[in-house]
Image (cartoon, rainbow, N blue to C red; front, side, top):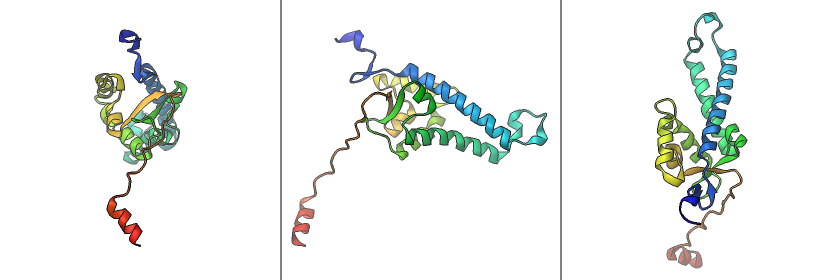
Length: 176
């Protein structure tokens, strides 16, 4: 079955998950807003009761909120491969080769959310997702060598075997 009927396939038979990615991002945004409200209620400056919410936070409070937001994505995607939004919509983050991403790759992916979110509504990320064709990767995915797939896609965590030892290593081990 070639041609237009296969355009929904993103990677060798995997369904395109762009709609679920957008939905998951909205769910995660709601989770982060709730987290912000909770933290704001705990650490906000009560003496500025008549000021807008943003004026109630000092520099350390804002840093705490930023760390919590990045931590939400980094920890949940490192441990489970999914945020709450991704879990609800049955998608997950994997390495480009299909294996489980490591903490470093997820850190890069999470850090580059800043770039993807420019100019504030994920326009750069959205353009990248559509510009990368069937791979559907945002800037953070390209840099981290990750992608988002359906949660039921098989995990291929078989890393290639290490290269064979060099001739010098073999000779040295025999002469020992």
